[in-house]
Image 1 (cartoon, rainbow, N blue to C red):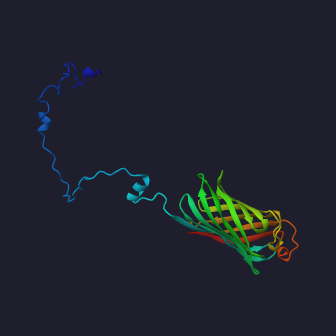
Image 2 (image 1 turned 45 degrees about the vertical axis):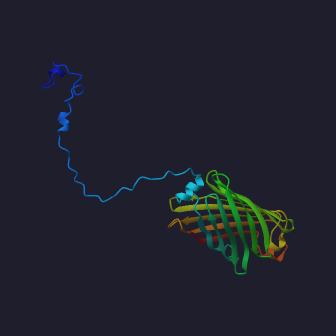
Length: 280
C-alpha cells in the first residue's frame, strides 16, 4: 500500500511553511491553557543573602588555610609483620619479632623498625632502626637515620642511609648501608613478595642478606657475606589487620667461628614456625 493511499495520510494539501511563525495569534491556544497547581509542601527555607564582599587574591597556602583543608594530614601505622614462635630441626625453641611503625604524611615519614630473636639464653640478635624517609619517586623513598644492635656481644651503633620501595613485579625491597665505629661498614638487603592464592590466603617468600666490611667475632660476624636468611610463610587474613601464619625459615652463616659467642651460632639452621601478623 502506497503512503498517499493510507487513510488520514493524504498529501494532496500542501503545508504552509509560515504556519505558527508569522501569525501573531498562533500562540493564543497555548497561552490560554490553565497553569498546573504547585502541590509541594511549604518550605520555610530562606536562601542566604548573596556575598557582599569580593575575596582578594590569595596564595594556595592562604586558600588552603581559609577553607580549612589539609592536603597532607598526619598519618601513622604500626605493623608487627612477624610475631612468631619457632622450633629448629635441632630442637631449639625461639621467639622472633619484626615490627615497624611510621608517622608522617605521604612524602616525609619518621620510621621505627625493630627485629630480633630471643631463646632460652636471652636475646641473641636484635636491632632497632630510627629513620627519616622522603619520597623521591612514586614508589621509592630514601632513608637516613641510626641503628642500634643489641643482644649477643657488645652493642653497636651505626649511621644508616638506604632506599625502600616497590620494585617491578611488586617486590617489596629495602637496601640500607651502615657506617659504624672503628671503621665498621655493613649493608643489608631485603626483598619480599605476596603471592595471593585467594583474597585471604597469601604465600609470602622473603630473602635477607647481611654484608659486613670487617670481622666482629664478639657478635659472631665475619667480613663479606655474613649470613643469608630465607623464609616462606603462608598466612590467612581473617581481616587485613589480623593474619595468623605458619612457615619455615632457613639460615646460613658464613665465616670462621672461633669465638665462644660465635661458636654458639649454627652455620646452618632450619626452623618451623607459627605466628601472627597484626597492624594498627
